[in-house]
Every structure is written in C-alpha cells, then in structure tokens.
Length: 453
Image (cartoon, rainbow, N blue to C red):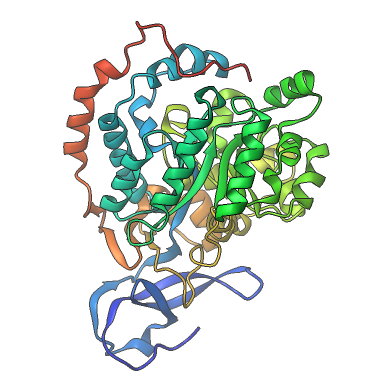
C-alpha cells in the first residue's frame, strides 16, 4: 500500500472499494476501503481511502460495495467469429470445420470482420475484459476496431502454408506495421495457424522472424488428443515436439488450447528458452468432448496458463469470467481433487498468469503502482453473491460477468454503471444482421482449408 504523491490533480480516483492485490510473491489478497489513483494511464498508487481525502481528480468513482480487479484478459479468441455464434452445434470438429466454418469463412468480407469485432469488443467490455489476443484474418480491420473501442489487444494475422510465402510475409508485415498502434494499446504476433496447416519449413522461418524482430508467435497446437495421435502416426512426433524441432519454443510463443499435450511434451515446454505460455478455453472443450488443458502439470513446470474463450462460433460466448469458473471446476473434476484448483489459484490464472501469457506481464494483470490502469469494478449486491464468507470463492463461483459495473483501460472509462461509452450495440447488430445471408451461404462448395486433425 503506497500513499499518493502530493502534486496536482489525478486523472481518476476510485475510492471505497475492496481491491484485489498481489503480494511480493504474487499471492492474492484483498485490501478493504481501498483507493486507486490513476495518472497518465497508469496506476499511481493503491492506498487507503482516507489517505486520498481531498485529492482532486478529473474523474471520481465511488467504489463502495464493489471489488476492484485487474481487467480480465482473453488470451485466445477470434473476435469476428461472433458472426457465427451458434451456427454449427453438436458436431465433431472435422464436420464443424469442413462442412460449416471453413466454407463460411471463405465468404468473409472486411465489413463483416469489422462488425463482428465491434460486437465482440462490446461483449468483452461488458464482461470485464480489457485485453484480448486475436488470431484471424483482415486484422487491419480488427486493429481499427481496437482503436475505436478503447480496448488493449495482441493481434496476429493468421496464415497457412497453402498461401505460399506470401502468407507468412503478410503476417510479418502486419505485425511490424501495427505494433504500438492505438496509442500503444496494440501489440502484435506472428500467427501461423497450426502445425497441421503450416509445414515445418514455414514454422522454422516464423521462429527466425520472431527472433529477428522481437515478436511473439501465437498459434494453435495440440488442440486435442486426436490431433496429437494423428501427428504421431504421420510424423512420429507430437505437435509440441514439432514446435521444439522448428525452434518455436525458443522464442516467445502462445500456444492455444494444448488439451493434447502429453507427459512426453513437458520437458520440451520446460526447457524452451523463449517465454512459452498456453491459453485455455474450457467451455469449447466440453462442447467438443475433448480432454482439458493440463493446467496443473503446466503450472508445476512454470508455464503460464492464461484464460481464453476461443471464438464464439465454438464457445458461444466471450465470457472470460465463465472461463475462470470452468477452469476451477473442470480441473477439480479431471484431477479428482477438490483441493485443486482453488479459487485464489483461478484468480491468479485470470490475472497475472494471463498477463504473462500474452507477453504483458510487466504492464497489466495486477493493481500496483506503475501498471497500466486496466481496472474493472464488480458489484456484489445481488442475491446470488450474498453473504460473502470467502471473497475469492464469491468472485470465482458466485459472481458473473454481468456483475461487472465499470471497465477501464489505460485510465479511460469504457463502461460506467453498465453503460457502454465507446460502442453502440443496437447499431452494430442491425448492420451485422443485414450481412448474414451472404455470409452463411455454403452453396459455392468451397472452403479455406481442409481439416484433417
């Protein structure tokens, strides 16, 4: 707890809240009657409310009865895919991809991408998400939406080896051009789709480009056990061993899903010299009947596991709060251990571990002096959250994303008292629905790729 310096008005002061804070070992605690002072987009101090009495500020928020948390982070999603929410249900993944998603994605236009991204950003702001990592197509359009919405994002332009060298070159060009855009809120990654759609030569070249330009790599790998088994049958190695072989574990890499990670993969992940992280989206795995990400095994070898939703076409929502709850519950079920994963551990994955996963571990994920002022306020006055005996348990197992009242990025208020300030949902929905008939037409018989697993 630090007092604010005595100079000039602050940009924003939040008072009277209970603040989720981390100690020097990263353990989670709660500070009652807390005040958060924001200046120049960063948290200047987290202190007691009486300490800031009389401090002038351009904006003031009365946080009494609310909990202040670091903004949630969606570590892997495809924002434009909200346009496909609910279109392909109750299907195995090969039918889902080949018969529905990849034929429809061949119809994508920049307008649809932009409208989908705008709707996705509105959904995430309302759910307390302040940062997301996106891996998709027409990413300049998504970058424009990030700028307009006020959110923070790590963006990567996806490519396949079937595109030839031009695909990889376009991903690099995007990453270099958009890095630092939106007043620094955009960071970028190289984005090969997956080891089953990008060959070893392209993966190795991507690793070299990442090393040369100081970029992160964001890709799908070992998404499920069937993919891992298929890779073993075809190549004699797992997808994670392919990442090792091509040098991708020696650069900063974010691996989406990893439910097919085997025990034999763990030494390669541990010994990688890059910042290796995994993004886990448990709701989609339940829908597809997959195993889940081996969070405990990864945690034990020091691999950050961030929370994610994947795209709304598979997950149906972009609700990271739900991902936090499901992560705790699914881990208990699969490990048959009610003591794992605890509510505080789930909050750790939702905050600091997610920040590390997207390469922003020094800037976000904690309410502490010097961190970017990405803050959400959560009201606990609903009947489903009372009484509060254990605040961590209440947040993870009782509260919902709809309890988020205020969302702040870089000290700018994007939602206040549940009212969105940067995006107009009715306008977005009306425009998007006019585009849907052309988007969902599969009569052309084409698809952007073939899913073999």
